[in-house]
Length: 327
Image (tube, rainbow, N blue to C red; front, side, top):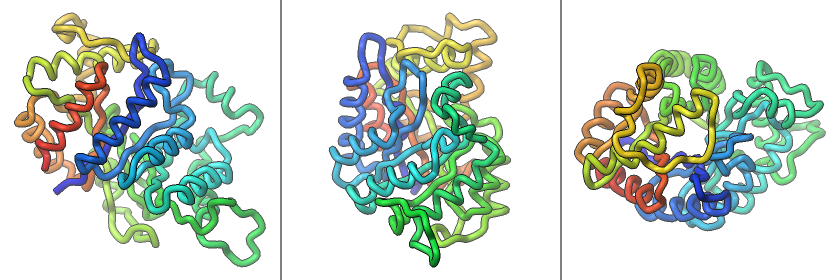
């Protein structure tokens, strides 16, 4: 059976605010923990008026502090925005507070636009091309101390927080394979290179202390409801948000619109078609059939489920139906 987890973008909905978004995230985490989901990840995005998880480590502490068993982590931390030592200290602190429950997923994209990336880094002159070196440095801070080591992450050293490489291209697959780390592919919004990336990762994987064989996590969009009509209706919020993002106009998550897809032009339809291979919308039976095909095609060890739904109760129900369909 494929492991099921949650990727929460902490959506700020139209008419709502960050306080509501973060309260809803904690409620969803508690709900999915009761259902049996394995892990709950939040992601780093900046200058996005529709996403409340910019201070990702703080949000992880909020979620972990309000739950009991579910693993909580970053999907992911955009490492070029940060000094590896600071990330080690943050996640070492989280591990000290919530032992055995913290994950550290790492990406090399800035998670924002160029101007905001510059504002984040100031004079650090971070180079995304140094991502592999930064990952190795970060891992060293979280490992057991070495002889003659002079710089320590406190808390952090010896925490051995599990690390994951995130990506939407072949680069991440190759790095995860070389380092012997789990690979999480962003198929929920960029599935184009998924199959090639998985082939490279599995073929080139080298065992490590953390992982003895390849482990693949795939992002997957599920919008489930008790009727097909209602599922398609509530999914329109995420479709609107995706189109707005792709055409350079990101904002709060909009309310659902009836028959939304019928109003789209050919260019907008082509944008949405890009993510259709890692998405399902409908009742439990539809979800079950679509996910079974996807897992059979990809051999995913774990699906991390995304559900951008405007009304919180509909979102809770979507995750509930997805769990029932797949267990």
